Image 1: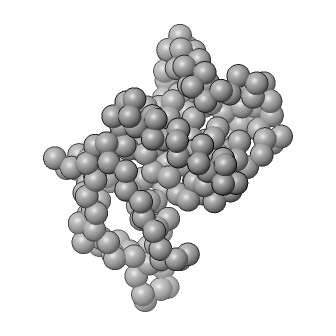
Image 2 (image 1 turned 90 degrees about the vertical axis):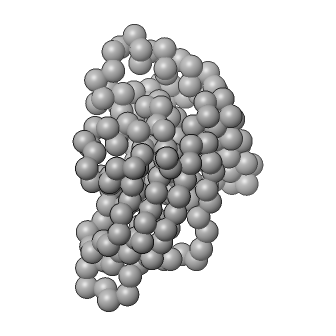
Length: 193
C-alpha cells in the first residue's frame, strides 16, 4: 500500500475560477519526491492539502489518502505526529523564544514523557551539531539556522512522511547542500521518507 496516494485532486481558492492545482501522486515509504514548477503553480497548496491541518480555504475535489485512508478522516493528533511539515518561511513556524524551547514544543504538545524528550533532543542535537545553539534566542538565529531548527523540531516527532515547502529558499548554496545531506542521511538511517 502506498504511504501517500493523491487521486484526481483539484483545488480552487475562493473567488477563483481556475484551479490552483490539478494533480495525482503516489509515494511509497523511503521515496524522495521533488515537485518543481514556477511560482504560483500549486506546489505549496498541494503540500498544505496533504498536511490537512494547514489546508487553505477553497473547493477541493478528489482525494488525499495517507496509508489508504483520507487525511480528513484521521484524528488531528495522529497526522500532527505522522506527517511533518517544514514551511518555506522559517519565521512562520517558530513559536518559542529560545532554541531548546522550540525543539521540545511539539513533543510537549504531544504529551511525551520528559525522559523520552530529553533523550530524543540529545540525539538530534548531537546529530545536527546544535549544542552551541540550545540557549540562544530564536530571534538571534539566521534564516538558515531557523530552518534547521524547524526541521529538527519536526523530526523530533519521528514523522513517517516529511513535507518540505521550498526548504532551501532562505539558505545559501552551502547551507542548502548541508540541509539535503542531512535529509538524505536521516532517510538512510531510518528508512523514513
